[in-house]
Length: 411
Image 1 (tube, rainbow, N blue to C red):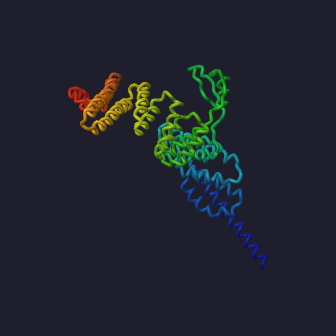
Image 2: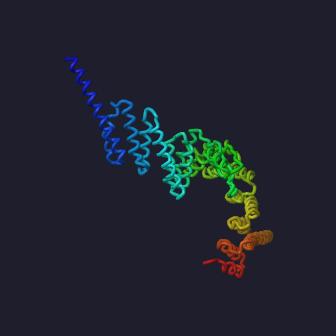
Image 3: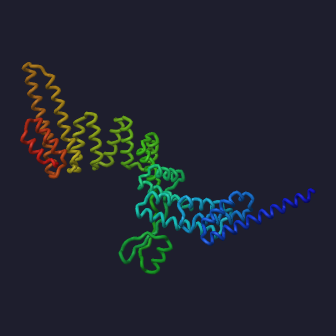
């Protein structure tokens, strides 16, 4: 009785194994005929049986399933991921697996480059991510995915890729091969074999190689800037500290850090960082403009004026700097009005009043002259310049000049 039971089980296993082989042959047949819908149906049926398959049978199943889901490059990104996940399960790589991975990789690379060229950056990012899933030895695919996501304004997606690259320790450092094209005299970057062949054929000359720059600094910098963009200030400051170690002279990082402290209300730190940026890039008008705005907000009028004057020295057509420089004089003049109104009617007070009035008038004239000088530089000055000029002349009681200024305002 016992022997008969063992024999029955053995027969059952044999029959079950035969059934699996039959189903997998049917799956392979459907795949060979490009009947992928039928193949996917068979894949689903066989999925629950993989636990009882031997390694050889499983590999056949996984390879056929991967081929079906790849569908000669006609499938979507999710199905490509399924195809690669099946290939990852193959117990032993063979030529068939290697060729299929190469086909998937080449297909995705063509699509990814195509999407990027046509500015379909969202699709490009996904395609490059899939490329990395197919061949995770090529970490550069993740870098391209991040770049595509940035171009697509997908900050969350870009951050995901950059954090992966950072965790992987990706630097992008490698060897770049080049040679000069004899026809156009331009240097071309080529893979080593192609370059060597072109040189042998005589179409190229001056072959050479060089080590590419590390992208580690760029990656940490972009992580920091994305956190800034997302308003995650603590993470941004932590990332900036790391990025600054790799990029100590990167002024954009300093300015980003300054902006965070400005959001946090730490004006002193904000101002100190902008001053640091100005020392590193003394000829950048934008930095000096931002410093001027900080001083204006702190009511440090003289320092603000120096900053705006520096901006106009570097960029004479900066209308915002001209307006703010003019405003610095008006602000100082308006402060004198408060003093004038606080005076009494004594002879000494009247004398002081006249002095302050003349001083205020001079400051208002300085504000007007600032705008007039700007107009000489830029005859097509924006409306805001003429509007402020008209307001100053009205405050001075010079109505004709105010009307003249208003006549230049474009309706």
